[in-house]
Length: 130
Image (cartoon, rainbow, N blue to C red; front, side, top):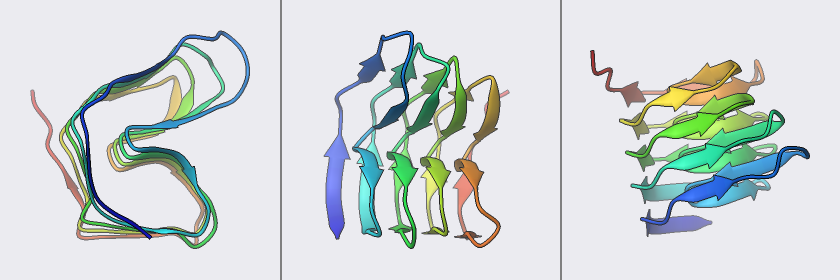
């Protein structure tokens, strides 16, 4: 279990090749419960093979995210980029919010960039600034 963490440190991955798992708090998590996490920092990757998230880059099987918030921008020249989670296998995401911008070439989302059909998102929201 990972809980009650605030992150203020920006993450920038500058290599031009290789896979990246990067997040505002965690690069990847294996079957974990993540609660009450707030990220204020920007997350950036220059490589095309990424899993980038405001809170976590990659969530493995049976991870749960509750009350996680991202305020930072999440930007990648790759794919699987999300405001809370970049990519996920069978995750449950509840009461999470993203207020940061998300940019990628494909598979992007304000809460999750890419997730499996058995994943669930409940009562999560985003703020769109026009």
